[in-house]
Image 1: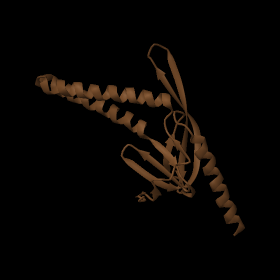
Image 2: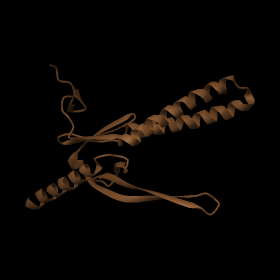
Image 3: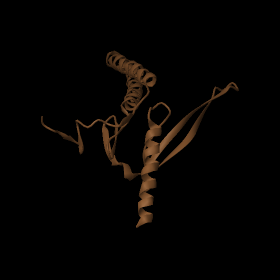
Image 4: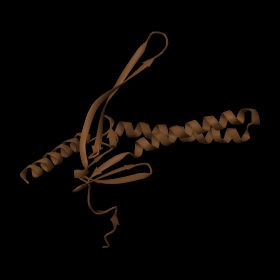
Length: 171
């Protein structure tokens, strides 16, 4: 059996846990991406058959729908895997690897969204977003309530930073 290395993590090593979309949200993202892909293909074909007066509108609308398609794919593929001493964050076309000690802090905050319908009715919604930062204070990645196992990583980051600070005090 030949061992293959993939970004310094053995393929045979199982992650301790994975932060990924919850099942219901994953199904929603799959349905949305199929819808946006089919709309992109449909309006793309119409734009090539249409006359020049509507072609610009059709190409623009196809581009907008394609952006929504990429956005839903991005949300669907966003995940974080926790290995022995590493955290691997992957999203659509990128894959980044961090040592657990490189993640300095996390911040949980509630983001509120308001929508005004123009007739006096205002609706609000909210999401609890957890953002992870490196030692320089730069945002590494963030996850909302739609993702499983975020609290496990928050707890491990706090414990790791606590043990690092305890080791510095002992020296």
